[in-house]
Length: 476
Ligand code: NAD
View 1 (cartoon, rainbow, N blue to C red):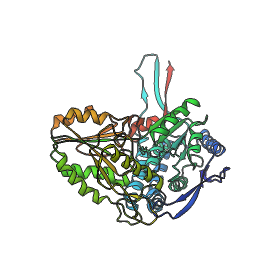
View 2: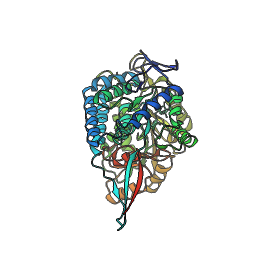
View 3: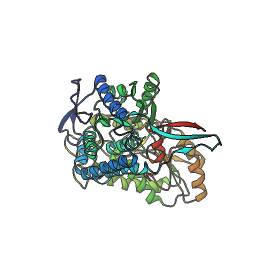
View 4: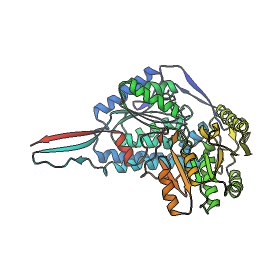
């Protein structure tokens, strides 16, 4: 059930998302699809709470302590939240219990902690006037999120949105709605007033209604580039609302001939490609390696691929669970077959697995002899598939790394300090990793450039996106 104005809400629409778990095809509860009139009701609830000032005008230290309580409640319900996401989108329960849910709680706490540390500004002083620059909440904002990291993506948006005093309408992905509803219940229990955090469940129709709504002041989106472009259009067609977009990626992992730590590089690459069945926006899905190292590196990767074989995600020892649906695996499989037809060589995987009867699983897959113009090297696969491209020089590696419409993450491996500095400056991506991948912290902004998006999640830079900057003059 959606959650609006502090209670579960029965939508006017009788359309539902019928659900089966990707773990084993077991039937799950259907999820109601909110239509435009349901979205109107959610927006009115959010607007009402914002205008009454029950949250937006609460003293900062009270907002902060309620956000702390919210984070504590998330931690107290780790098991409930983890099992909901595990059943709905197939991620391993181990990942959810030890990573996704605690990280989501920490993110809410970080933004709660930040709000009384971020100062407003004063313009250079004049004798007879004073200009102050303040950051004020946007008003009613919507967070539209994907299914691959449901709790973390949600926390990265509702954390700063709530911290800045906005009222929020969360639209979870159709494949991961249950944890979002539980989250809204916990927010209310923590003391976030009714109407301040609402959840509308649904599909693209629901998301579109939010993004085109004339009384929504901002849409903060994480998902595909294709839908991100639509969100931008909806903002232009409606009220020019604030938007931030965290979109797709096809990130290059560059290994140069000066790299002397091949086993560690292979371990890091496998971890950040095969984890979560490759359903990671910043997956290192293109290995660009100097041809002199390929023969030593590939066997190391093959060894690592074995570690990331999927297993039943409900087993606490499972590191990799199911993919989110069978239909998606058909697309992944077709891309792999097309790549072989284009001349790529399959050296492991390349097929579905029946890890659990009825479930959606794919073997970790590596393709060599890939050239950067192939579809497999350009499309975001969102599955456990690595393309290996060999190069003859640093210049060629950089050129190929940047030859993509995306710019989310990139990495360079070298034991030469000057090379590391030079190449990291040349790589066009929102995050660049040197001799590493996936380093992450609440204090650092996360987000792409080019067609990977606009705006940032996390850090104090994210906070500012959820606010209007206002300039006020006093004349003496
Ligand atoms: P998606 O774009 O299909 O859906 C994302 C959300 O948008 C869902 O809630 C969906 O219901 C909603 N939506 C769909 N059509 C819409 C429309 N026309 N108007 C408004 N809302 C609409 O993406 P997905 O399949 O859920 O997630 C996978 C994608 O997300 C991948 O491309 C991945 O790279 C990206 N992603 C990016 C980041 C990042 O930080 N850059 C993080 C995670 C995932």
